[in-house]
View 1: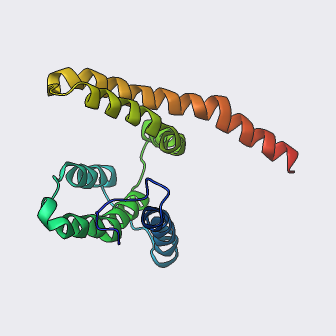
View 2: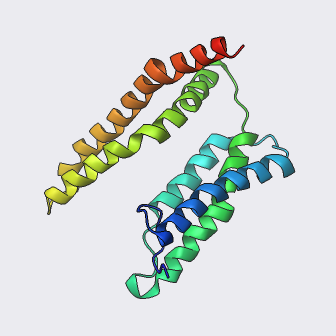
Length: 175
């Protein structure tokens, strides 16, 4: 039986089960949320959502190796409660002004290509860190910024050079 709080990264039965669960739960939870909730008008939704994301991402590992269930419980709480709350708050946000609208459109258009392309850069970054043991935060910071910037550029290029032209071509062909 799989005993870790993570999985879905290799092709064995336990990891496949965790990976499928990680994929299907958010999808169906999002469908359920879209069907049963009506977004309200939330002031400063972007601020509240950003704060929640920062709190979750800055949370250290809980429990250590002898109490893996504690960290697993925190991850389940985030997946079942916190992340749907963030999605609901984001959907309840009100965009005011042309500048905010352009920023939201840019980030929304970038989200899927970023999701699809960032992982390779993260792996390169992880490889660099593992090959340079004992590096300080000051040494790692420029590489992390380069990884972040590279992920944005790669996602934008993927969107403009591949995704948008292919979707336009498919729309024309399938009319």
